[in-house]
Structures are given as structure tokens and as C-alpha cells.
Amino acid sequence: MPLIDKKYLEQLRSAGLHVSHPIPAFCNGVWVCKPTATPGHNMPGFEGGYITLIGQGPGCPDIDAPMLAFFFHHDKWIVSGQDCAGGMGPADFVDEWESPEEAVKDILDFYFGDPSRMQKKVAEHEKIEARFREHVESTNGASNAQPD
Image 1 (cartoon, one colour):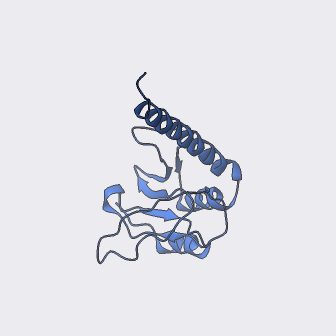
Image 2 (tube, helix red, strand yellow):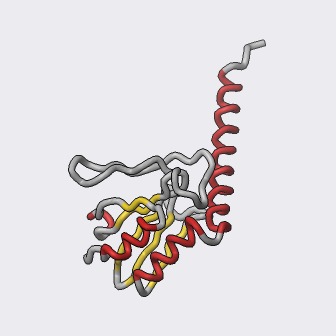
């Protein structure tokens, strides 16, 4: 699989985005992240990142938005914003492009352009957090119940 040409990675870095080292697990693609210090769309309270092994480049900075995978596979340039485990969630996306220029434009749009894309991710994240809080509260309430 070809590595992504450095000029496209530099376009992302010039916009203030962090680009990981090439990752063999997804066709020598990269993670693209928006550091908290970079203005743009974000997800309040977001925590995330990736792990870097010693000697593979700088680690992931503090980020305030979901990461995107950027790679070339089956003659298409892929931008993947999949956050849900076990399949695609309602706000997840996998965009396929004919050129790396189109893929870079898609990435820049996600972080700095059309806000509805990030808003959809924020809304889904809030739904999941609400379900989790509800579950914790119901579990704690059941365990704290006093016998009559």
C-alpha cells in the first residue's frame, strides 16, 4: 500500500491538525486529530487519542474532537470517522474519494467547515452519555435500596 504523499499531510498540519505516523494496521494510513489548541469544531468534554510505541514519532496531543482515519484502500482514498464499537453508529461515516485532494478537503471540512457534521457526533455522544448516567443511577439506586 502506498504511503500518503507528504504534501497532503503537510496541508493538514498547516491547518493546525496533528497527523500520526503511518500505521500498518490500516494500509499505512494515519490518524488525523484536532488538538485542543487549534480553533475549529469540537466536542465538549471529549477525551481520546491513540497510543504511540517508542520510536514511532510524537504521541497524540490533547484533542477535543473525534479522530479521523485517512488511508488508501482498493483504489479509493478513505476518510473514516467511526467512533462506535461493533459497527457504524448513527453519526459515523466512511467517505471514499478518487483523489487525496478530495480526502484532505473532506477532513478540513469536518474540523473547520460544515458544523452539522460535528454537531451530529456531539448529539450522539450526548445520547450515549445520558444512557450511561441513567444506567449508573438505576444500578446505584437498586444497590442502595433498604429492605422493608
